[in-house]
Length: 345
Image: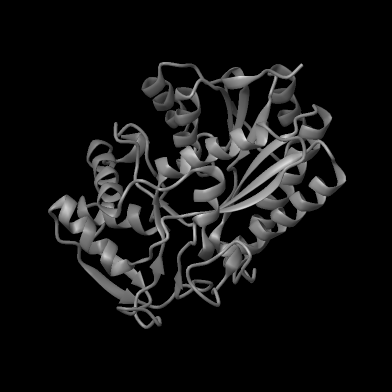
């Protein structure tokens, strides 16, 4: 018999990653039990140690690949899993263009295996980490959940494929409930400075790159494209604090727990777009550091401008993004200063 209330156990895939680790903290602080799994391709086991330090609670942690049915079955056999939040996946747009099969295998095939094992163990609630990349280059902004889906790169297409798989699986299983969260650009870090974004090598995402330039780890920022149809020629994105994002997953999960056969899709964003140069300026202010940059060629698959219409999540989930760009940059800088070499420091 499934447990009621906050004594439920949530499996967080990709739990040692950036968004996964922050969501583990929020779940534990809300009274949930957490089991984490990660193949450490984009995560770090020290993130789980830091989660435990922040919350004072233990997290059973498995280093395993979701495509391995036996490893996954072991996790479900050793724990009474009630709900799944699925973050695990590769996420670099440029890399997905170069290595599409890697993205379809890791992001799509792994999800199918996860659903098979969930079905075997009768776990029925699923929150999926999707992406605004499923919209491609939107016809209009802000982007609504009902707008055209036309992803422009394999990463976005892999997310869209999983969305379609989840819809088909939902239709075929009357007890299965799923919420798909299409989120925009998560940045920031936990205010403790204990967990944050720690990419390997040269960062693909804007803020880790900016923060490393500010810290003197990199010489200058490459701004990919200065001729977009935007206010200053650089790409415009909707940046959302990772903690606001983590809290939205818990709110979505609690809605699933009330229902027997629910399927919903929500945009998660602030509803405002900032250009690359606006983000650079905001980061310069909080770090009190000049950030040199140069305009380079566009990356394949990137779009001009995209930001969310978050009203559906505001109205139906009672969720909204509370933290502004200054706080996002400030928390990111705090993480960088306290962890100049990331988790390996």
